[in-house]
Each structure stands twice: as C-alpha cells, then as structure tokens.
Length: 68
Image 1 (cartoon, rainbow, N blue to C red):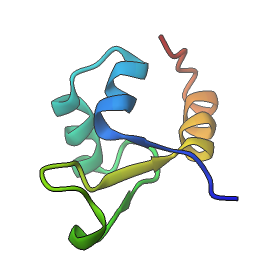
Image 2: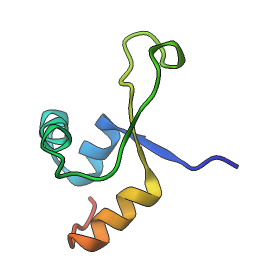
Image 3: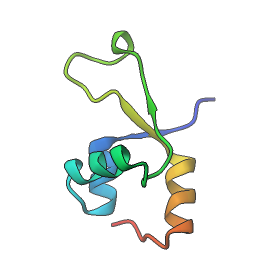
Image 4: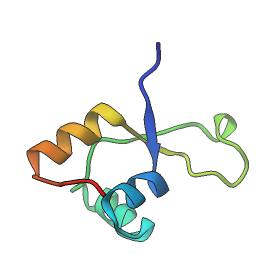
C-alpha cells in the first residue's frame, strides 16, 4: 500500500495559506519534507511536488499547527 501525499495546493488549503507561501517555505527549507516526482510521472501542467501525509502530520505536531 502506498502512502497518501498532498500536493502544494492541497497543503496550502489545509493550512489556510497561499500556494506561493508554501513554495516559499519549501525554498527556505522551513516546511515539511517533500518529494519532487519526475516530469514523466506528472500530468501535464500539474505540480510535481508531493508532501507525504505522515511528514505533514509530524510537522504539524512539532510546530503546533492546527489544520483548517
């Protein structure tokens, strides 16, 4: 069984932030662990960044973030 993942837009909606804010956190290295999937695996125009749900939950707990 594979682990569920969130896209950049899904994580932004979960936290009530803009996708650009999540992208900025990723660039600064201050957000949760993420993976970039190969272009060939992503649908055309789709975000290639994926956040494992387990890592998002751990980050939320460690940083006292309450999702929307």
